[in-house]
Figure 1 (cartoon, rainbow, N blue to C red):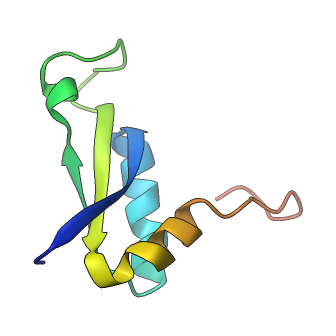
Figure 2 (cartoon, rainbow, N blue to C red; figure 1 turned 180 degrees about the horizontal axis):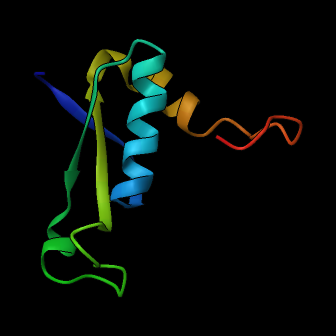
Length: 81
């Protein structure tokens, strides 16, 4: 994937994987990258390598749609994912 842009930051690896799954379900190729802060022992959630933060990256042409999907309000009637 070329020309990647950051569309979000996940607090941990689990949150990053959920974001990637959502984007991929919508046909958007996405990747996550552990930030420099997390490799330096950021926060207290660094257990077994799942501590964050993780940048969520997509192609530049998919950025607007990805941002919309990741920031869409949750419908309270929808069951938790």
